[in-house]
Image (cartoon, rainbow, N blue to C red):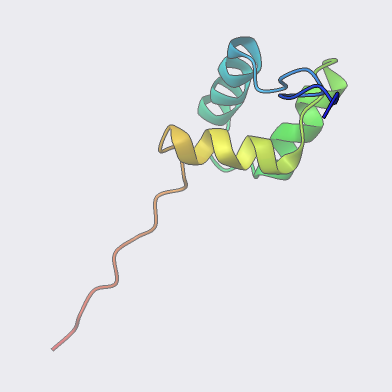
Length: 72
């Protein structure tokens, strides 16, 4: 029972990282989460592809799909 509770590592999705993900998404709307994560890693930020996907989902920045037209 002497174990510490709570997070054991630093929080990775800081406000600055989230801003950078959104920025990269607006600069290139076609960029995938993998590409955005790779760009962030090259810039010195440590973030996983899944974290980038979560940010994109949280802010509703998914790629827009064209509605299927019903012909008839």
